Length: 90
Picture 1 (cartoon, one colour):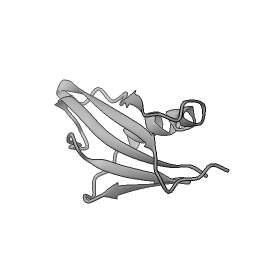
Picture 2 (picture 1 turned 180 degrees about the horizontal axis):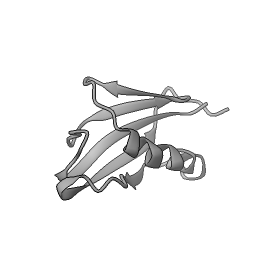
Picture 3 (picture 1 turned 90 degrees about the horizontal axis):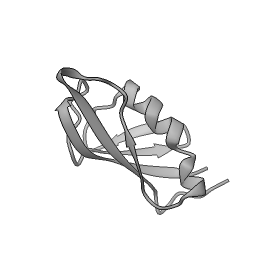
Picture 4 (picture 1 turned 45 degrees about the vertical axis):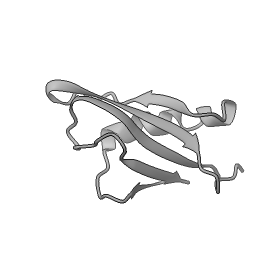
């Protein structure tokens, strides 16, 4: 199973989950673990998981945008997904 590092690259607008650039997560098997904070976002997870397997085809970092429109002026959260060094494919 692959392990994937997820990093918030940018946030334009207001994110409902209050994610900020630099926030990181680790996706192992089917568990999403925040690294150093307690925030996660179910809406973003749908987009992240849908793109998880692209890393098997393209094992370099890929970028995924959250589909949630956010609040106020709206939000666009951009994530970078990359294979974790300790991750292995099966």
